[in-house]
Length: 78
Image 1: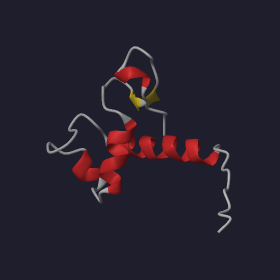
Image 2 (image 1 turned 120 degrees about the vertical axis):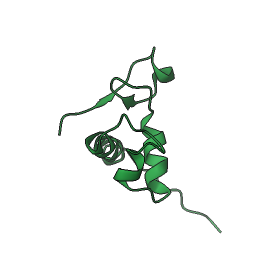
Image 3 (image 1 turned 135 degrees about the vertical axis):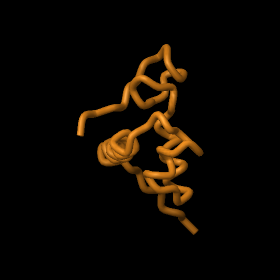
Image 4 (image 1 turned 90 degrees about the vertical axis):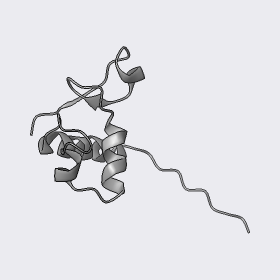
C-alpha cells in the first residue's frame, strides 16, 4: 500500500492529511473511532474522494506514530 499521507506546513496548518486533499488524518480516525466503516467514510455522506486504501493509510500512519512514541508512566503516590 503506497503511503498516501502528506505533511506540508502550507496545507491544513501542517497537519497530516491525505495527499492531494485537505482531509486531515485525524478526521478519518475520528470517524473510525465512532464506528464508521471504510465504506461509509468513502461514501457521499463523508469523503467521496477517498478510497479504502486512503483510510487504511490513515490507520497505518497513526500506528507508526504510536509505535515510535516513548511512554512515560506516572505512579500516583496515594
